[in-house]
Image (tube, rainbow, N blue to C red; front, side, top):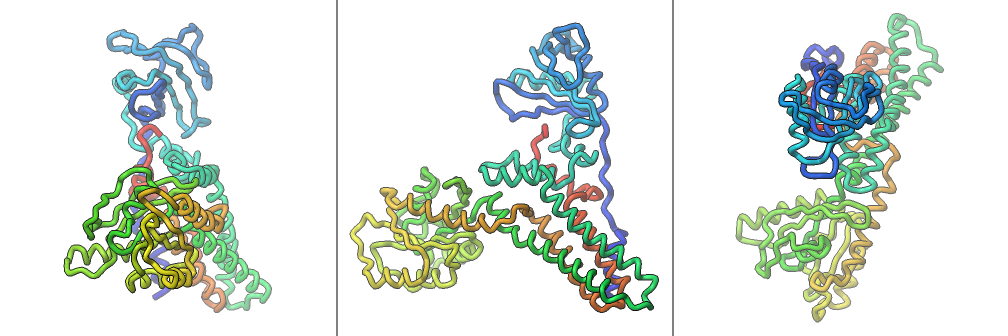
Length: 477
């Protein structure tokens, strides 16, 4: 049964249709929409030179040279009117960004001007580009792999220095190189296994068997390291999910508003005001945090509030960092102590809020909280006292998580899924190799592992995957 399953997975009999490479000429604005000092209209495809000659009038009579900015005018060939004074540069393929002829026109950043230039190009045969189509063509032309394209998308959308640095490393091919090294090791094992398939009746020399098993173990360790670094990389890219939990009216919403510097969360004296989890992103100390406000934890006869409390508990369980907020004016209740018990000491804090009010929490209660092993910070959301120590504590936890991050790491769910499948295939292949009499089955499992790796960098046989990935890009990239 295992052999039939593996053969089916590796044969590729039900592959999705391969993507169609569109070789026409496309046009789009490569800069952000809206008014600006300068905008860039980009064209790519075989008709770039023809369209340039039809709409661009250089200031000098000499024909524009490739790779050099040329000053001139854009003239609408339909009516002969001047559209704008521009700089234009031609970048012939195959040594361009995406391997095709590219024309970039730097014009004034008026939306009207941009639209008129694009309209001129379209009347001459260019088509409006789809999201990410310029980069998609770069991938299909072999100018970059899919991992690098995703790194480019991450770099464009990066809001913090850490995420930008990780995206730049991926764009430069660091992760691709790591996967190629893993692939080369699997190929070496596969070549050795298949070389011995025709000689299965002969006993494999002990030293060859040991070397083969050693490489299998090395590959599994390398894949496992990438998988182990996923969470830290994701947090650096997307932010640390930080859940604020506690009883009603302890000041969770007010505390989050103080950290955000604006009244984003609804604050009301009536218990149960927050019924659903609400997330807001903020940059604290150079790290991104997704601060999550949750419903107050308490017993309630209301079905809606009970559902909100269940959702709050689930949010706390899924958070990267948990902040349990207590009221300095009351003794900790059993439900609050229950919140503290399961928390990871390296990723949680206790905040005693409302420290500006006359305190009624006695020293014994504080001692019980400190016995939990969690760091305790006193704050006042009203006066912002203690918010700086809270920010310092949050960034310290984030810094500790990022310190564990691998120099090269995966940060997308599709990468993780493919590597998990690759690791499973390598585990099965290793077991078969240990048995020494199932070379054909081991070969099939190694091929599955190779296919899973290839799906990360080059899923060029799957139009749907490409549509999803490049749908994240802006139109002009």
